[in-house]
Length: 257
Image 1 (cartoon, one colour):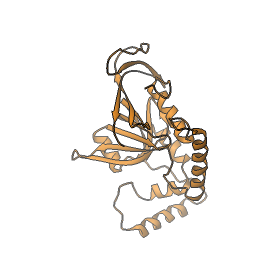
Image 2 (cartoon, rainbow, N blue to C red):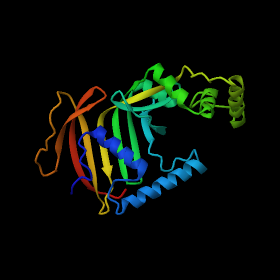
Image 3 (cartoon, rainbow, N blue to C red):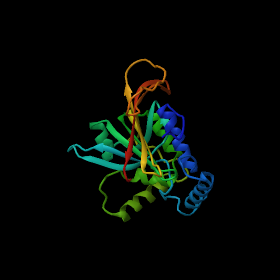
């Protein structure tokens, strides 16, 4: 069984899959041009009718952290692009995930896309993005989003929805005709990968799974190591002035997802 694409750089492969998740192209679907067209039409209808719908949004990922009690904690976040050699997202530093990442920067981010059926898991540690980047992200957000985010810190306990709506309207009135300032606690994170795993569904249920593991050292050309497990070594990667060496493990699984 051969790969459906020839990308060997895990970041390039992720960006390729991310683009194909937006268009519906790629994968092993027959007549994928028709699926691509249908996906784009449905996505546009959802954006027009249900602007807050999460259906067919490739930028939504599950971010998993660890609580102070050493328990798993997960929620969805919006992927904001590949920067500084990692996967960025923004949040309130005073939120539960902000506090958890402050205590333990290790995290896992998982993307799942239906068309074509693919999953990408990124394991690594986060770094905080600059204040300048946080303010740029804040300015790019809708005013309604800004007002709701500024009204109360994420994960904070509120007296009720009516009270929250009142605070949001107060902020809108206070800053009528002028920008809503970025809260001091608003900021971004960048998840620097030390392991990236790709999963692609197959019609015969013999799914494809590849894992890229970060290795220290100089950049070397890619080569496959002959073995019965069809494993190889990805030994070249360079993105945003960061150089990586990844060890590639390819496993074939007969598993229902």
